[in-house]
Image (cartoon, rainbow, N blue to C red; front, top):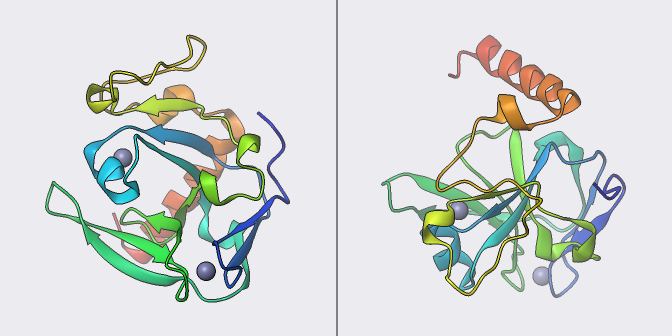
Length: 164
Ligand SMILES: [Zn+2]
Ligand SMILES: [Zn+2]
């Protein structure tokens, strides 16, 4: 995995700038229909990090609750000026899904896993050396130990607060 700690990114107009203060826990390439619709593209690249490890340097990304096919909402944070989506949240406010294409160097982020390949567009060919799943996967079997430790810290925090 390329070193992503310290990498910066932002929206198109420059109002929102952020910096990753850690390596991502894991990097998803999601081919689900929600991600396709939200991005207007074939898939999304999400860098998973603790919210407090995505340091917003300038601007205030605005949360927009976007409906998903399963009836839940996904909170997408957008630049208030140019409306580019910089990151999102899937129910857990402690966890950010940073959109890989908004990094200053998107090539620094290589997916660790491909998910929801059941709706992958047929012309997208996946590399043989990256795990791919029809739907989702078990973090415990795929994430490196250091990331699982960080995940456990998040779970402990949520348990303390009474969130499941
Ligand atoms: Zn902007
Ligand atoms: Zn998705």
